[in-house]
Length: 419
Ligand code: NAD
Image (cartoon, rainbow, N blue to C red; front, side, top):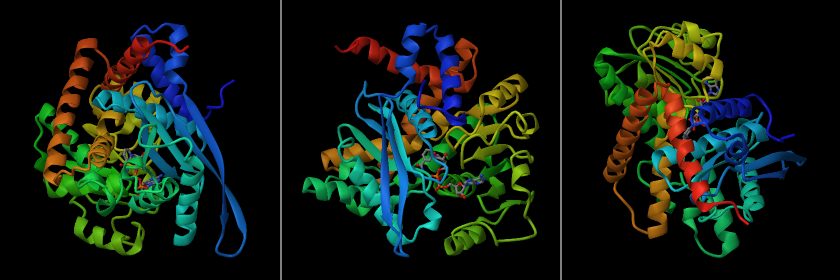
């Protein structure tokens, strides 16, 4: 009986088994590839502002250490559990292998609602989480990064906590830090920039002009907002729909991003911006558009709404937004160009890798250099996924995962089983 349970882990497992069948991986090798190397569960006690003590559960799952240290984000979310964290770690493994990065996948987080913590409480939870993880992470073992509910400031606290313990500044233990303490130019925008660039490649493949296209973006945090801004401002795509956990808006004539950006800067969320273009968030994903970007959370495209999607391109900014049964429906429909999550949002970990390399070398690159190198990797990876899908007559998701799993499998085979 495994400790990894839940719908999200079930999805990662189901997807892996499809790849394992496709590659005809023997049963005896499947568990070794799928199940994580290590899972760490900690209690994080906090002195709350009202003088009470509250304990949160924290996790870190390291999927495999075959090709280098593990790498992955840290999520602060109320319903987080070890199965979800493990699924995200597994996806990170295939994502890093697909992009050719020398990492295994990891993921971690704290089951807390960061919106309900004061700034002092958030700092205390962040520092205590890193403190508990010090024996298990490090620049050569496991490098953390931001994810939902965490940001550059949290990464700065992680780096400081780790560095104070070691006695000197170790910027390379986390990525997604502020530039002034060893972060890289371009990291904040990297995931959204990657999403937008891959959409550009998909549009070229479909012979569609960006300026004639419309997009709907679900989630207006780091990934969603940057994707929307770059699509609109650098590519001329019309953004017709946007949502976050507080509101959803749709306007066929196009939403005014400058006004929405100002509102979100002030309020921190979309709610309250307009009542006229407000729509039911549940229906936003099935409204007509050329490009649909789920950039919020897992399992939002399901068997219930997949038949009604009205887009040409599905660009998965979020991790795991599409369930396997929805995948099957989309494949049978055959009219949607899918940019699967482990390709579509890989810009984040690619630029995180650049940040780690720069920190290790103490040699920093310009933003132009970062963006050019990011595009080079995405161009190659996009081509490999599309070609593999055509060659094997499989979906883009299965092709992307197949390339990732193949690489990890080969590494494990060459290194052998110790002892
Ligand atoms: P974030 O915390 O900055 O933003 C999340 C956004 O999603 C917020 O706007 C929130 O309001 C919204 N949201 C949450 N639940 C929602 C719902 N049910 N409906 C609509 N909106 C909802 O997080 P992020 O860093 O932008 O991450 C978003 C997704 O992208 C996650 O799946 C994450 O794992 C993935 N991702 C992030 C990065 C990165 O570099 N930040 C890299 C790769 C993948």
